Image 1 (cartoon, rainbow, N blue to C red):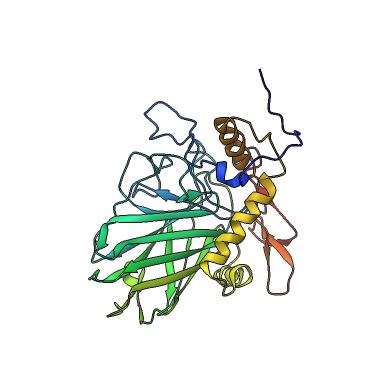
Image 2: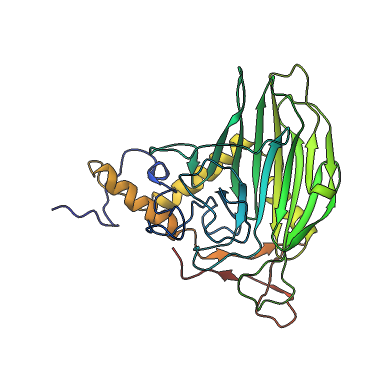
Length: 339
Protein backbone atom coordinates (compact mmCIF):
# COMPACT_ATOMS: atom_id res chain seq x y z
CA UNK A 1 0.00 0.00 0.00
CA UNK A 2 1.34 3.42 -0.96
CA UNK A 3 1.25 6.46 1.34
CA UNK A 4 1.48 9.93 -0.16
CA UNK A 5 2.97 12.15 2.53
CA UNK A 6 3.34 15.92 2.72
CA UNK A 7 7.11 15.92 2.22
CA UNK A 8 7.45 13.86 -0.95
CA UNK A 9 9.92 15.63 -3.25
CA UNK A 10 8.45 14.62 -6.60
CA UNK A 11 6.39 17.09 -8.60
CA UNK A 12 2.82 16.38 -9.59
CA UNK A 13 1.51 17.00 -13.11
CA UNK A 14 -0.86 19.97 -13.33
CA UNK A 15 -1.33 23.06 -11.17
CA UNK A 16 -2.16 22.13 -7.58
CA UNK A 17 -5.10 24.54 -7.43
CA UNK A 18 -6.79 22.64 -10.26
CA UNK A 19 -7.24 19.63 -7.98
CA UNK A 20 -9.27 21.63 -5.43
CA UNK A 21 -13.00 20.85 -5.32
CA UNK A 22 -14.64 23.62 -3.26
CA UNK A 23 -18.01 21.80 -3.42
CA UNK A 24 -16.68 18.68 -1.72
CA UNK A 25 -18.20 18.29 1.72
CA UNK A 26 -21.01 20.79 1.14
CA UNK A 27 -24.15 19.42 2.79
CA UNK A 28 -27.49 20.02 1.07
CA UNK A 29 -29.15 21.23 4.30
CA UNK A 30 -29.04 20.73 8.05
CA UNK A 31 -31.71 18.00 8.05
CA UNK A 32 -29.98 15.76 5.53
CA UNK A 33 -27.06 13.40 6.01
CA UNK A 34 -23.92 15.47 6.45
CA UNK A 35 -21.30 15.51 3.72
CA UNK A 36 -18.98 17.49 5.97
CA UNK A 37 -20.94 20.69 6.68
CA UNK A 38 -18.39 22.92 4.96
CA UNK A 39 -19.07 25.86 2.67
CA UNK A 40 -17.92 26.51 -0.95
CA UNK A 41 -15.80 29.52 -0.02
CA UNK A 42 -13.86 31.68 -2.46
CA UNK A 43 -11.14 33.89 -0.98
CA UNK A 44 -7.45 34.68 -1.11
CA UNK A 45 -5.39 32.50 1.26
CA UNK A 46 -6.20 33.57 4.84
CA UNK A 47 -7.89 36.68 3.51
CA UNK A 48 -10.47 38.74 5.35
CA UNK A 49 -13.37 38.59 2.88
CA UNK A 50 -14.78 35.28 1.66
CA UNK A 51 -17.57 34.67 -0.80
CA UNK A 52 -19.96 31.92 -1.83
CA UNK A 53 -23.00 31.28 -4.03
CA UNK A 54 -26.17 31.24 -1.93
CA UNK A 55 -29.33 29.34 -2.84
CA UNK A 56 -31.27 30.68 0.16
CA UNK A 57 -32.89 34.13 0.27
CA UNK A 58 -32.82 34.09 4.09
CA UNK A 59 -29.68 35.95 5.16
CA UNK A 60 -30.01 34.59 8.68
CA UNK A 61 -30.01 30.92 7.68
CA UNK A 62 -26.63 29.37 8.51
CA UNK A 63 -27.19 26.59 5.93
CA UNK A 64 -27.39 28.89 2.94
CA UNK A 65 -26.24 26.66 0.08
CA UNK A 66 -27.80 23.54 -1.40
CA UNK A 67 -25.82 22.03 -4.30
CA UNK A 68 -29.01 20.45 -5.67
CA UNK A 69 -30.89 23.76 -5.91
CA UNK A 70 -31.13 25.85 -9.07
CA UNK A 71 -32.28 29.01 -7.27
CA UNK A 72 -29.67 31.77 -7.33
CA UNK A 73 -30.21 33.92 -4.24
CA UNK A 74 -26.98 35.80 -4.94
CA UNK A 75 -23.32 35.82 -4.00
CA UNK A 76 -22.89 36.10 -0.25
CA UNK A 77 -20.07 37.84 1.55
CA UNK A 78 -19.68 35.65 4.60
CA UNK A 79 -17.55 35.23 7.71
CA UNK A 80 -19.08 31.90 8.60
CA UNK A 81 -16.38 29.28 9.19
CA UNK A 82 -19.00 26.52 9.57
CA UNK A 83 -22.81 26.42 9.44
CA UNK A 84 -22.72 25.30 13.07
CA UNK A 85 -21.13 28.61 14.10
CA UNK A 86 -23.40 31.15 12.40
CA UNK A 87 -22.38 34.24 10.48
CA UNK A 88 -21.52 37.86 11.16
CA UNK A 89 -21.45 40.94 8.95
CA UNK A 90 -22.94 39.07 5.99
CA UNK A 91 -24.55 40.63 2.93
CA UNK A 92 -25.93 39.37 -0.37
CA UNK A 93 -25.43 40.66 -3.93
CA UNK A 94 -27.92 39.67 -6.60
CA UNK A 95 -28.43 40.71 -10.25
CA UNK A 96 -31.82 41.08 -11.90
CA UNK A 97 -32.87 41.55 -15.50
CA UNK A 98 -36.45 42.72 -15.97
CA UNK A 99 -37.21 41.71 -12.35
CA UNK A 100 -36.50 38.05 -13.13
CA UNK A 101 -34.72 36.06 -10.43
CA UNK A 102 -31.78 34.13 -11.93
CA UNK A 103 -31.70 30.35 -12.32
CA UNK A 104 -28.39 28.45 -12.48
CA UNK A 105 -26.91 25.02 -11.91
CA UNK A 106 -23.99 23.87 -9.79
CA UNK A 107 -21.53 21.67 -11.73
CA UNK A 108 -22.31 17.97 -11.58
CA UNK A 109 -18.80 16.84 -12.38
CA UNK A 110 -15.29 17.76 -11.28
CA UNK A 111 -13.14 19.47 -12.36
CA UNK A 112 -15.22 22.48 -13.33
CA UNK A 113 -13.46 25.80 -13.80
CA UNK A 114 -16.62 27.72 -12.82
CA UNK A 115 -16.04 27.07 -9.10
CA UNK A 116 -12.51 27.30 -7.74
CA UNK A 117 -10.77 28.86 -4.71
CA UNK A 118 -10.10 31.99 -6.78
CA UNK A 119 -13.23 32.17 -8.96
CA UNK A 120 -17.01 31.98 -9.10
CA UNK A 121 -18.47 31.87 -12.62
CA UNK A 122 -22.26 31.50 -12.71
CA UNK A 123 -24.27 31.23 -15.94
CA UNK A 124 -27.92 32.29 -15.71
CA UNK A 125 -29.96 29.73 -17.61
CA UNK A 126 -33.11 31.86 -17.82
CA UNK A 127 -31.42 35.02 -19.10
CA UNK A 128 -30.35 34.02 -22.59
CA UNK A 129 -30.55 35.07 -26.23
CA UNK A 130 -29.19 33.54 -29.42
CA UNK A 131 -25.88 35.23 -28.55
CA UNK A 132 -25.58 33.35 -25.24
CA UNK A 133 -26.56 33.62 -21.58
CA UNK A 134 -25.86 36.29 -18.98
CA UNK A 135 -23.27 35.42 -16.36
CA UNK A 136 -21.85 36.73 -13.10
CA UNK A 137 -18.21 36.19 -12.15
CA UNK A 138 -16.32 36.99 -8.96
CA UNK A 139 -12.65 36.88 -8.03
CA UNK A 140 -11.68 37.79 -4.46
CA UNK A 141 -9.51 40.44 -2.88
CA UNK A 142 -8.13 40.47 0.65
CA UNK A 143 -10.84 42.93 1.69
CA UNK A 144 -13.46 42.64 -1.03
CA UNK A 145 -13.85 41.28 -4.52
CA UNK A 146 -14.07 42.19 -8.19
CA UNK A 147 -17.35 41.18 -9.85
CA UNK A 148 -17.98 41.05 -13.59
CA UNK A 149 -21.48 40.95 -15.08
CA UNK A 150 -21.69 40.01 -18.77
CA UNK A 151 -24.95 40.27 -20.72
CA UNK A 152 -25.01 39.25 -24.40
CA UNK A 153 -26.90 41.32 -26.95
CA UNK A 154 -30.66 41.01 -27.54
CA UNK A 155 -31.55 40.53 -23.87
CA UNK A 156 -34.10 43.21 -23.07
CA UNK A 157 -35.39 44.63 -19.81
CA UNK A 158 -34.24 46.67 -16.84
CA UNK A 159 -30.98 45.48 -15.33
CA UNK A 160 -29.70 46.19 -11.85
CA UNK A 161 -27.68 44.81 -8.94
CA UNK A 162 -29.24 44.74 -5.48
CA UNK A 163 -27.41 44.63 -2.13
CA UNK A 164 -28.95 43.11 1.00
CA UNK A 165 -27.05 43.54 4.30
CA UNK A 166 -28.07 41.56 7.39
CA UNK A 167 -29.12 43.91 10.21
CA UNK A 168 -27.78 46.84 8.22
CA UNK A 169 -28.57 49.51 5.67
CA UNK A 170 -27.38 51.03 2.43
CA UNK A 171 -26.04 54.29 3.83
CA UNK A 172 -25.40 56.18 0.60
CA UNK A 173 -25.53 55.82 -3.17
CA UNK A 174 -24.50 57.87 -6.16
CA UNK A 175 -24.84 56.90 -9.80
CA UNK A 176 -21.80 54.61 -9.64
CA UNK A 177 -20.96 54.15 -5.94
CA UNK A 178 -22.95 52.38 -3.24
CA UNK A 179 -21.99 52.09 0.44
CA UNK A 180 -23.55 50.28 3.36
CA UNK A 181 -22.92 48.00 6.30
CA UNK A 182 -24.10 44.87 8.05
CA UNK A 183 -24.17 44.91 11.85
CA UNK A 184 -25.30 41.31 12.30
CA UNK A 185 -23.62 39.15 14.96
CA UNK A 186 -24.70 35.55 15.51
CA UNK A 187 -23.00 35.68 18.90
CA UNK A 188 -23.36 39.01 20.65
CA UNK A 189 -20.52 40.66 22.50
CA UNK A 190 -18.51 42.86 20.14
CA UNK A 191 -19.10 46.58 20.73
CA UNK A 192 -19.49 49.12 17.93
CA UNK A 193 -19.42 46.34 15.32
CA UNK A 194 -20.19 46.93 11.64
CA UNK A 195 -18.98 45.25 8.49
CA UNK A 196 -18.80 48.13 6.00
CA UNK A 197 -18.80 47.66 2.24
CA UNK A 198 -18.29 49.91 -0.74
CA UNK A 199 -19.23 49.01 -4.33
CA UNK A 200 -17.85 51.04 -7.24
CA UNK A 201 -19.52 50.37 -10.61
CA UNK A 202 -17.77 50.81 -13.94
CA UNK A 203 -18.28 49.65 -17.50
CA UNK A 204 -15.77 47.14 -18.85
CA UNK A 205 -14.24 46.83 -22.31
CA UNK A 206 -15.95 48.96 -24.94
CA UNK A 207 -19.26 49.08 -23.06
CA UNK A 208 -20.81 52.51 -22.63
CA UNK A 209 -23.92 53.53 -20.74
CA UNK A 210 -25.33 55.33 -17.73
CA UNK A 211 -25.64 54.10 -14.15
CA UNK A 212 -28.76 54.88 -12.13
CA UNK A 213 -28.99 54.50 -8.36
CA UNK A 214 -32.10 53.50 -6.44
CA UNK A 215 -31.38 53.92 -2.73
CA UNK A 216 -34.96 53.02 -1.78
CA UNK A 217 -34.51 49.49 -3.17
CA UNK A 218 -30.81 49.11 -2.30
CA UNK A 219 -29.67 48.82 -5.89
CA UNK A 220 -27.82 50.35 -8.81
CA UNK A 221 -28.96 49.80 -12.39
CA UNK A 222 -27.80 50.86 -15.82
CA UNK A 223 -29.27 51.65 -19.20
CA UNK A 224 -29.25 49.03 -21.93
CA UNK A 225 -26.63 49.68 -24.57
CA UNK A 226 -28.37 49.33 -27.95
CA UNK A 227 -26.45 47.50 -30.63
CA UNK A 228 -23.62 46.35 -28.35
CA UNK A 229 -22.32 42.82 -28.87
CA UNK A 230 -22.35 42.42 -25.09
CA UNK A 231 -22.54 44.52 -21.93
CA UNK A 232 -19.81 44.22 -19.32
CA UNK A 233 -20.23 45.83 -15.90
CA UNK A 234 -17.51 45.62 -13.23
CA UNK A 235 -18.16 46.10 -9.52
CA UNK A 236 -15.13 46.76 -7.31
CA UNK A 237 -16.13 45.87 -3.77
CA UNK A 238 -14.15 46.85 -0.71
CA UNK A 239 -14.91 45.74 2.84
CA UNK A 240 -13.81 47.02 6.23
CA UNK A 241 -14.52 46.70 9.95
CA UNK A 242 -13.41 50.31 10.47
CA UNK A 243 -15.46 52.60 8.20
CA UNK A 244 -17.06 53.04 4.77
CA UNK A 245 -14.18 55.24 3.65
CA UNK A 246 -11.71 52.54 4.71
CA UNK A 247 -13.70 50.00 2.69
CA UNK A 248 -13.35 52.24 -0.39
CA UNK A 249 -9.63 52.68 0.32
CA UNK A 250 -9.15 48.91 0.64
CA UNK A 251 -10.68 48.40 -2.81
CA UNK A 252 -8.41 51.06 -4.31
CA UNK A 253 -5.29 49.65 -2.64
CA UNK A 254 -5.97 46.02 -3.50
CA UNK A 255 -7.56 46.34 -6.94
CA UNK A 256 -6.76 49.69 -8.50
CA UNK A 257 -7.83 49.43 -12.13
CA UNK A 258 -6.77 45.81 -12.59
CA UNK A 259 -8.82 43.93 -15.18
CA UNK A 260 -10.96 40.99 -14.14
CA UNK A 261 -8.84 38.49 -16.06
CA UNK A 262 -5.56 39.74 -14.61
CA UNK A 263 -6.91 39.71 -11.07
CA UNK A 264 -8.23 36.18 -11.56
CA UNK A 265 -4.83 35.03 -12.84
CA UNK A 266 -3.12 36.71 -9.88
CA UNK A 267 -5.42 34.97 -7.39
CA UNK A 268 -5.01 31.60 -9.09
CA UNK A 269 -1.22 32.00 -8.96
CA UNK A 270 -1.37 32.94 -5.27
CA UNK A 271 -3.32 29.79 -4.42
CA UNK A 272 -1.14 27.61 -6.60
CA UNK A 273 2.06 28.99 -5.05
CA UNK A 274 1.04 28.04 -1.54
CA UNK A 275 -0.69 24.75 -2.42
CA UNK A 276 2.31 23.65 -4.52
CA UNK A 277 4.53 23.65 -1.46
CA UNK A 278 3.08 20.20 -0.97
CA UNK A 279 4.03 17.92 -3.88
CA UNK A 280 3.07 14.34 -4.59
CA UNK A 281 4.33 11.71 -7.05
CA UNK A 282 3.20 12.26 -10.60
CA UNK A 283 1.62 8.79 -10.64
CA UNK A 284 -0.49 9.39 -7.50
CA UNK A 285 -4.18 8.50 -8.04
CA UNK A 286 -6.32 11.46 -9.06
CA UNK A 287 -8.78 11.03 -6.20
CA UNK A 288 -5.94 11.25 -3.67
CA UNK A 289 -4.67 14.46 -5.24
CA UNK A 290 -8.15 15.94 -5.05
CA UNK A 291 -8.55 14.92 -1.41
CA UNK A 292 -5.14 16.26 -0.42
CA UNK A 293 -5.34 19.63 -2.15
CA UNK A 294 -9.00 20.21 -1.26
CA UNK A 295 -8.22 19.61 2.40
CA UNK A 296 -5.16 21.85 2.19
CA UNK A 297 -7.23 24.62 0.58
CA UNK A 298 -9.66 24.48 3.51
CA UNK A 299 -6.85 24.66 6.05
CA UNK A 300 -5.45 27.75 4.28
CA UNK A 301 -8.73 29.67 4.49
CA UNK A 302 -8.14 30.16 8.21
CA UNK A 303 -7.29 31.99 10.34
CA UNK A 304 -8.70 35.20 8.84
CA UNK A 305 -6.46 38.25 9.11
CA UNK A 306 -8.76 41.16 10.04
CA UNK A 307 -6.16 43.93 9.86
CA UNK A 308 -6.28 46.72 7.28
CA UNK A 309 -3.92 49.36 5.83
CA UNK A 310 -5.04 52.91 6.64
CA UNK A 311 -4.50 56.07 4.58
CA UNK A 312 -1.14 56.62 6.28
CA UNK A 313 0.11 53.19 5.24
CA UNK A 314 -0.17 51.77 8.76
CA UNK A 315 -1.57 48.32 9.53
CA UNK A 316 -4.49 48.69 11.96
CA UNK A 317 -7.49 46.69 13.15
CA UNK A 318 -10.89 47.07 14.75
CA UNK A 319 -10.88 45.16 18.04
CA UNK A 320 -14.00 43.22 19.08
CA UNK A 321 -12.31 42.68 22.45
CA UNK A 322 -12.16 46.36 23.35
CA UNK A 323 -15.01 47.62 25.54
CA UNK A 324 -15.43 50.63 23.24
CA UNK A 325 -14.80 48.86 19.92
CA UNK A 326 -11.85 51.05 19.01
CA UNK A 327 -9.17 50.76 16.31
CA UNK A 328 -5.64 49.73 17.32
CA UNK A 329 -2.27 49.30 15.57
CA UNK A 330 -1.14 45.93 14.25
CA UNK A 331 -2.80 42.66 13.30
CA UNK A 332 -5.69 40.64 14.67
CA UNK A 333 -7.14 37.36 13.41
CA UNK A 334 -10.22 35.20 13.93
CA UNK A 335 -11.55 31.69 13.22
CA UNK A 336 -8.17 30.26 14.20
CA UNK A 337 -9.52 26.80 14.98
CA UNK A 338 -11.18 26.00 11.66
CA UNK A 339 -10.01 24.35 8.45
